[in-house]
Image (tube, rainbow, N blue to C red):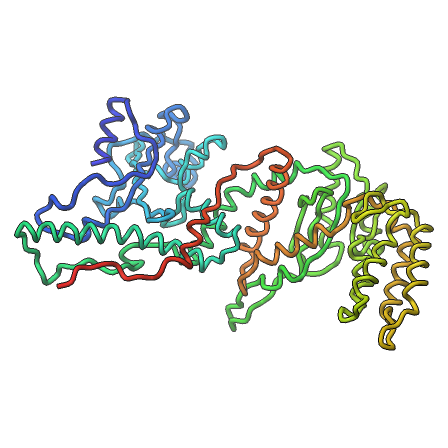
Length: 529
């Protein structure tokens, strides 16, 4: 048996197995009767940190958690250390059952060694107090994460994260993993019927009354449900949350662009227990980006009130001061409304109106059915260009207010009285939008804006954010995990483009994604007669 061999290796102090997934090497056909339970042999992991990581732990590394609890109750500062035994939580006794782990294609048993203190307290080697004793630089050595009664492997976590990043819903992921588990189950079933035919050919007859192999079900062969996958994803995010926060806190910024998006958070909420009504929690998500399009800060918000997000700007001010970085400007779509609040945190920083919103406020008043819609929109966008700036894209900062006003007058002289089929191109709503923009021009809100400093990057971000919440309803904890992981991906993508690496990058299992559509739901083969 694997645990006996492990104990022998520990005694000899040689070839102690690492905590990897292993498969049973016993052959059920050698037994006197064919039993289907003998064929449902789950892979397993042997877990014994004292033996497997002697370069990290020794006999005085783990304090007995039961003794610590007793000491807190009695105010006695007595404690004892845990030492390994040759006994395992391998299911031979009911109270010594192994833990169930969900893997990418099969459930796995976590067989942990039994530790004991001098007072006789028995503790599993996967107790939370033991797992938390791992130094942060060695946490990658733990190949699993645990819930209360079960857990999952790190490989399963990475797979689910990749599939979520590819846009799959948890229902689709559940179906995909079920297919993988069915594959593992069918292999066990086929071995059972293969041995049955082999024994029949040798003249060995089985008891026909209770001779069968069960159908695939969660009771017989557990596989992760939709709720378990959501818990897995959230738990995986919490493991990485500190790393995400540290990576985000190191980002630099010369310019900041700020914007709300509303549709992305339309379905975040909870079901009220009293009547089952869905209660919406948030109105929008507010993002602050630097000039590279990296998310510096973000927050779910219930309104567009500045006070609701003021803590974010206070934190950014402290961060930039620690980085000794001078902020050159802030781009926002409500510059005058928030100018007083922003100036409290960044008194010497100019507050500018976002060019994208400045253009859209007028363009959205134009009729898209009008054949001149594109020409008018193009000419209006050019009023914020320096006369020397030619080409498809802007290559110079926006000019002074007098130049922009001159460009606007030329635009109006061309299009203000222009009509199509008896209707003016520029409507009353368009004239009102231009009047409001002219006030911003006079205040300098649209001058001296560098190239690339606008929220058009945010608009592309908003389109990608909508894909995150493709389900109709989603809880706030899962939404927070998805958004945080998504923003970190953007940061990682930018760093990879610049030749740096921040996070381990693995391949997307596209071949596995195809199984959802390519693999039919077939019943497993079973011999006739």
